[in-house]
Image (tube, rainbow over all chains, first blue to last red; front, top):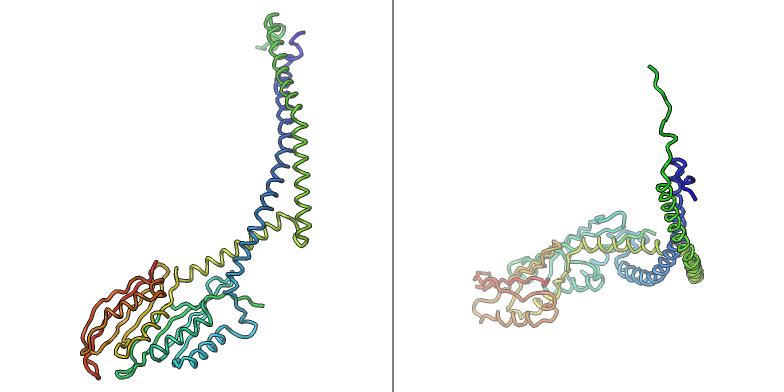
Length: 176
Length: 199
């Protein structure tokens, strides 16, 4: 019943004070740590399981949207060839006369495979023929965007209009 | 001169009262610590049991997932793959959106209406542009009518403003100016109109 065991040396005293605290901390952290670890892992997995169907749905929606921009020109030939063929066909069907046509592919984001075809077109036709030409082009590919169209009379007595068009079509090149 | 290393205070001991106080303080401290330790130890089985229960539930979730997704390595990797796919798709959609006008407009409806004008009305000049992302699409055009005929501009405006396709995408048409010009087939009135796309 004496304090001698506690105050024998400074180190002994400190040990008597610190050791119980350490034991407490270690046991508290060990028990809580194990419990928290298991609960966190369970809650995370449960949340992931709830999120996965929504992520899948979003992924399907995005894929559906991007599918409209995907092309497989590399399978059959170049994108230019496909557009030239499409525009010539529309020109014949509408009687709109294409005089010059420039197709210039431009890379927007090489890493994501996103490119755009810049189409510069000059031609002659009546307002009705031009409208029909654009209608056929749009029905064939609604993703062609008209950036600039300028029309002016091609002759003093003629109904014909001289047209300059700048069109663009964005696509995702998926080389097979 | 040599110094003495004898510690004269070494033999001094604490008085009895101080030793008793120190002993009681230490005993109280250790008792409190022991009580807290017992309290922790008492709660430990419950916490450990809860931890084991969470572990079991987690295993059940993973097993259920593995059965429903035999091709996926595990739940977390599957979610990570989906996340990567979504990020890639989002980047693609953003890149496409950035390259296009904010709300692409089509001048086709305007051209169809202009093409269906009576013969006396002729399209003289037409321009459509939506070159930048932020600026609205703009249509500017001139219509000619023979100078001798009665001016039917208001009829044309009514027709334009009554077209559902045009009113859906474009604001009301504005008549900018009317000017007289001489052409080979006689004098004409050239009316200039402007239309901006809706935001």
